[in-house]
Length: 500
Ligand code: HEM
Image 1: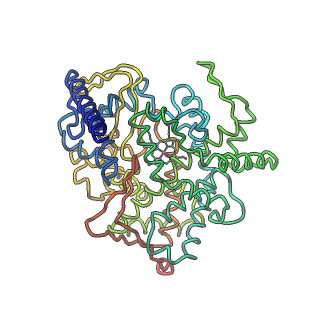
Image 2 (image 1 turned 90 degrees about the vertical axis):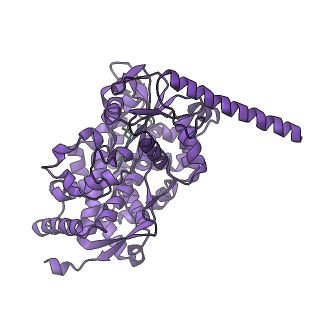
Image 3 (image 1 turned 135 degrees about the vertical axis):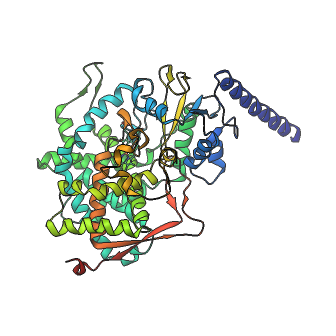
């Protein structure tokens, strides 16, 4: 028995060693440095055994190889590159989109809710994205603004009635706001507060990032074959509830024949139009309730957490930068004094709010890295790097946003970087909290509007104070998200009479 165990351990160690040698030789031949800390499992190996977020592991690599435009990272036998140089990143995401249009992740067949724009690839992605885009035009968002404003007003009431929430767990509280607002934008609003929606409790529970989902996404990002072999279904457990809820809302809306300018309206429109067709390729997708539920699901999966993280990052910075907080309060108060009601145009015209929003997203991008898979042999311009089909490319957001060569004093919160005069000095390819290129976040304008609607009402009613624990801000162990921990924001009610 002992001998068998020793033989197995010996054989596995030899295989492990040989994979390391294979990776070393593979990248040496191509003239690219291989991240030396783990030549077999690369950052994935470190992520599994450490307590750190994935972006922090990539940050180390970013700093370890300051002069390399790309660094190879091991991922068993899958070739993978960490593309560091901004021009190369822009090339992958934008210029050479046809070679890198693949999300780098494929879900398994039958994972019904994962069959959405976020995870789709190829022509199916293109066709679905085209049909979802109309929900996010400025005209559509303008008609939808009433939902976001109502959600923000309900949020302030929700907080006022629960003083215990003013003291701590602000990220969770913002997460509830984002779930409620996104739920309202999908399913429409009724007379009750969006926080009393029967859907909300279920959704907040279902979308809390769990160890399970984090692990499964990590396996998928680094080893698609293993992901397929295990037949992993990411969201199986939510199918009955979510598909059922969408069916119910769509049918109700079809019967009522009222327009509410939300996602349910878009679904009814698509069902009435019949099959979605791509005239170039002849591809057709039937707008079944299942596939529409999967698209609604992406609002939650892709939208709730990042928007809550963005709002949290903004409040953290405002709560420890009194000068900037005062200036934003003044802008918001002036606006409320001039107008009885917040509208899409008024919120969009708040210049300082926009500067604060951008700077906080620079410092605290909710997504740390992007992933793409190469589907056509190509060359990256800086360093003349050949990339072969099947190579995974990891692309930094956090590290570019914190690179002192790109943003001097990157740890200083300075909204002036994004003022009208200064913004032209920023390399637009180096600011990408929402990604870049044709797979840019579809919800960019929606998320911005939702966050700003929430902030305007919050800061009209409260001021904020940040409390950072000993040892400074830390980060939760997350695969793609950048979630600050060891820091909280306190809401302090404002005496509005003083501002009148
Ligand atoms: C502040 C909040 C948000 C941030 C920072 C954010 C960030 C991102 C990023 C970095 C990507 C990847 C882009 C790429 O691969 O180039 C992405 C993709 C995506 N986001 Fe967002 N997002 C936010 C909110 C939302 C919301 C509210 C929705 C839905 C309404 C949404 C829906 C999506 C979808 C569907 C994709 C995939 C797009 C595609 O592959 O075509 N996001 N987002």
